[in-house]
Every structure is written in C-alpha cells, then in structure tokens.
Image (tube, rainbow, N blue to C red; front, side, top):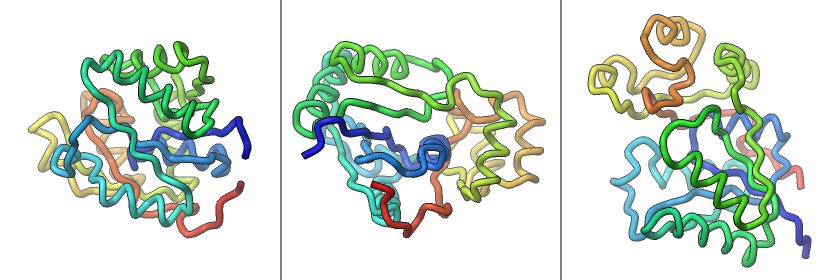
Length: 197
C-alpha cells in the first residue's frame, strides 16, 4: 500500500473543484471536515448529499472526518487520523486568503502533524481564478450568502460571464472568500471520468 497519499479538502464548491482540475485529479482522497454529530441541515451552503454525489461522479474516495471541540485540538487530531489511518502525507486546499479562524487552524494542524500543506490558489488574482473556472467549464451554483441582502440577489445563480460582471459591481471579494457567497459545483469536465491514479 502506498504510504505517501494525497488528499484534497473538499466542500463541493468552486475553489476546491478548480484545484482538482489543476491537479489533473491526481489525488487519492477527497476529505470533508465536519463537526461532531453533524446533520445535513448544518450544511446549507454545502449539502452533504450533494458532496457524496460529487464524489461518485468523480470516482474518488470521500472521507468525512469529524472535528470535535475544542477545535484547535480537534483539527489536530483529525489530521493525525488522516495521516495514521489513511497514510496521507499531503493536503491540498482551495483556500485563497486568510479569512477567519479555520484557515490558520488547518495550516497549523498540518504543520503539527508533519503534513505537507499546499494551496494552489493562494493569493491569486480573483479575475484570473474566475476565468479559469470558465475555461475548465466548472458550473458552480451559488447556494448561500452570509449577507441577507445578497440571498435573493445571488442564491440559485450559476457563475458565468454575466454573473461575474454583476459580482464585480458589488462591494465583495470576487471569489466570495469572506463568505459573501458559497457555491456547489453542479457540472464539470471531471465528473464521470476515471481516476487518474
């Protein structure tokens, strides 16, 4: 059994899907981090049943890893389990910026467990990333916004050239990195392809 496996942190959204395309699907696992005793209602932005369906279409193993409180210790233990039980040595993430607590805690948890942590989209220019989504034909639907004013305006729309122009007119991060909007991928070139590994 290979001892140097690679995993991609998977929310089902556009950024992790873009990373998967950039990696040409060369990962061993998709990993979704969830709080202990989670339920699908807790994941309005990223419904679990859709994440499971995506993994089937990608023909990649999906791991749900529960994270217990206190979260700093919980994340550390979660990544230790990935390393020891699944022989994962490299973690990829779709993070673009440090936004909030979780970005830092994931990076630190990987470091504490001597896991290689790679963020291919880190600090990239937003319009460039949006253009890459379109070039890879990644269809991402907006599922949630942390701003009530944007719920009716954005939720349900699929990111395309027209919507990108609309997003550029709003006082938000174009990629929605601060939670201005969340997405789920409904179609992409990698769905129903065989794994590259």
